[in-house]
Amino acid sequence: MARNPSETKEKLLNAFDELLDEHGTAGATLDAVAARAGVSKGGLLYHFGSKAELIRGSLERLELLVAEDVEEMKAAGERLHYHYLETSAEVGTALDRSLIAAGCLALENDDAKAALRTTREAWFNTLNDHLGDADLAMTIQLIGDGMYFNQNFGLSQDDALAHVKRILKRLGL
Amino acid sequence: MARNPSETKEKLLNAFDELLDEHGTAGATLDAVAARAGVSKGGLLYHFGSKAELIRGSLERLELLVAEDVEEMKAAGERLHYHYLETSAEVGTALDRSLIAAGCLALENDDAKAALRTTREAWFNTLNDHLGDADLAMTIQLIGDGMYFNQNFGLSQDDALAHVKRILKRLGL
DNA sequence: GTCTATAGAGGGATAGAC
DNA sequence: GTCTATCCCTCTATAGAC
Image (cartoon, rainbow over all chains, first blue to last red):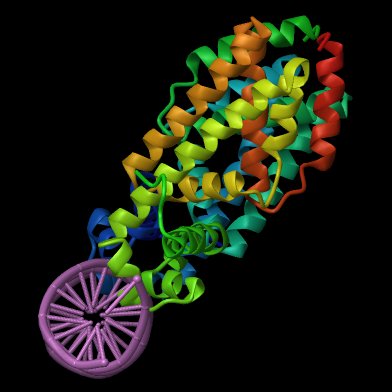
């Protein structure tokens, strides 16, 4: 749907995701989103007829970004699982912002919950295909989830990653 | 502070945490909290003079519950890290509800963020003291965080736990 | 395509009765 | 200690000008 959106629509979605990321759902009001995107509330509501549509737009974009990310993972070849963990703690990328936004929305919105479930399945399948070991795939995914979760609370995950990599070595990875 | 609160105060805190858990911050209005606790909004505001005080009350109770949980972990002896992972995916306990509530609040509230950081430190220190291995302690904590995170999106973590336990065996735990 | 103005609903908080 | 009534503010959404 949002495959070829106008520039203003993109700016609005960016503003929405950023505000969710920084201040949670309470901070992501239509007023605030419009102001950050540099348009008026009326302008916003021309592009997205309601807040529900804005949410849909954000979730649809997440889907696209995840599909791109899965391709990138596959391009990492033998390092696929390392690439996954390294990017789990990444901050400031479009995917990261979009994912945090969905995480905020998921607390109050079932569509967002479903989108996150789908996302997780895509990653698990990619890890599992690569490793051929569901135990390892699930464990690595959980570690990635943990790093993502913590990064959300302002905890640096740099040394966390170092700890985890040493454990992966012990597992022969 | 909240060491000997009135019964009504406890009922209000329970209602607040439950509503945060079920519907996020948007659903946890003073009206809704009061209604679920079986009092009027005025009644609520007698006990907690503002929404900020209600939040403080919830976070203070979390602190108590975490301290209790750490004692329980220590009581598990050699199974300490297993006990930690098994209870990470637990649903419906007072601690679990309180923790999810704090997770909701943390998106918009810095005190809640700080409370979660403190909580994580307490658990990490307990795991690290027991295992004597920071790499393992950090990895197990991240896995626990991951399970907690997923459980938040309605994903059953029963088989996740089974996968992880097999990996722990490979690590000699 | 973007703006202002405004209606209508709901949330937080205060005042005062019981 | 708990209630009702009410005020004010903010939020979503609509109407209509440019």
